Length: 198
Length: 186
Image (cartoon, rainbow over all chains, first blue to last red; front, side, top):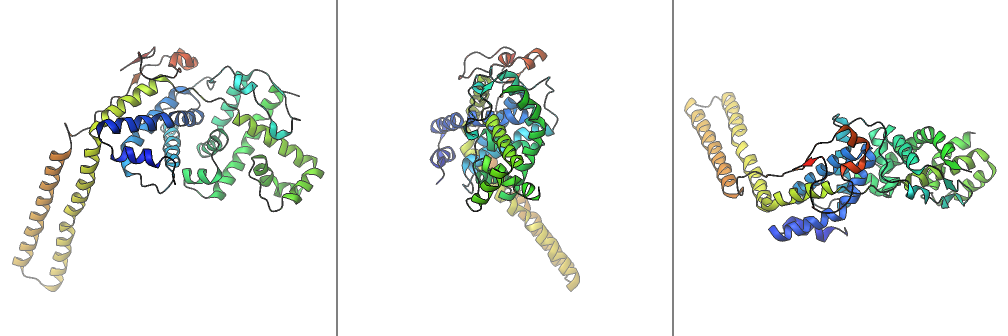
């Protein structure tokens, strides 16, 4: 059962006032996820804003045609990913001197490498700069690999859901993710050495 | 080394928290005795943790305003959607008589049908197509709502080159409505 089913059905059948309320609710539920996906794929706030607007425009216009053949959230992510990638492909994307970090790096400083059993890097230096460098490494990936990395490691989607979002097999998801990591490894090797204090 | 290359993918999935249950012990044993693979797995874990720790970007207020305008413009959408659906099917039906008539005409040529029969058939298909077109037009006029077109008003942004380097100038603070951000106009 799709957790968004009730809300989506409300958008599909409601008349004027209820319709507005249902859409606002849906927007509030997804705006942060959509904007973040767009932001991390495009690498800058201006393009992310354009892609998010386009995503919600498409979403609202097409919601009546949605038939729950996949999870609603997968559909939303698919539109967002395509909007962000298309924006880049159409050459609309602006050139930035460096990807704009979204914070002063406080969140990065809170990083805990729990998976490393505490043996890994323990402190961070220059969180803001680090965020820019990581974002730059993501932006250097091809659009398909970028989408996989963002959906998996930033949005935390399962491999199954990613295959539903991108309409590809699990094997493709895994191989693309492996390729993305190979590329990220090369891009981030210097970054890790510079920023992690052993 | 051959083993190391073979299990590289498995190490990545394990670092990502989706390792297979089958063969886990063999993988563990290999990693325990192979410094290259141990380092590779450690790097993968660090990389994944780094990606996961990227901060969430705050949603700009201008997105709220633009989408709010979009929702406003959708007021007549339920009727539009219904009429679009029916119009689409009437339009599809309207296309049927023409190929059918042409097909009949070709078959008629082969069988040597009389010219009068052909003229009748063509006349019938023309009348049927015209009737379908009138039906589509009538349906659209009756059910397309006010004006028949949606009027979404998106926010038009004017962004200076300085704003590209300064996210604050792009109104990255969340919150519904309020005055337009600097460098923005409706």
